[in-house]
Image (cartoon, rainbow, N blue to C red; front, side, top):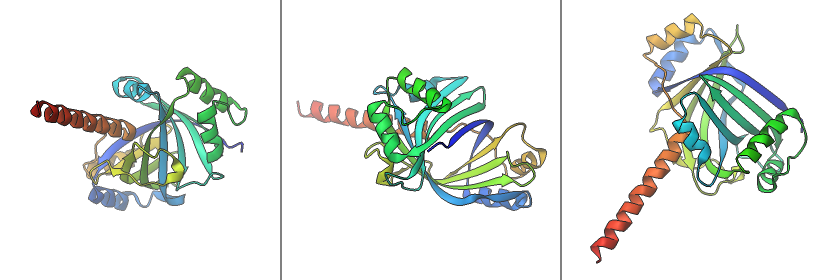
Length: 244
């Protein structure tokens, strides 16, 4: 499977309510058309080191962030197409490399370290895999996505991610998209463009009181798990102390 993709774009994120989503789409519906895939369930399996180096670096970083993940649309079978990706963000600009392969090939690559085929993008992915000493599945993030693009400037895309959930166990894309709710009912709007945001969209966002924010699905899930484990540990220590 030789599908190769390279992206370079600016991405802005916004945490919005369902009401803001409805109002925004009503304001810009004459400029947008739904993506050909329509609504989809997006599942992302993030890879990391045993000490969570990638996500810790991403949370701490000011200018440069890097993530490795395997993405599917819906629940894949072993012979389904998935995308092995490396996503880098530097000073607000996102650089993404991704290669399509079957789920079986992706899982074999993670477990064995042997690339499924040769290509320039695979070489870049493999360099990152070796640099991080072959990270393993660490977190699965799923959401329901609705995507649109500008009919006059197709490189401008808007995606609305709702019902965002995660799980830190049963880390296989083939196990489905179930998980713990993550965004408290909010929708994550991402605006992706190759250049500056058009004025018509900026005015629509302002009219809906929608403002940029920072939100990492994996980062938020990681910090929530960290907090939960810390609380469980504290409860255990308190219980043990009470029994003395």
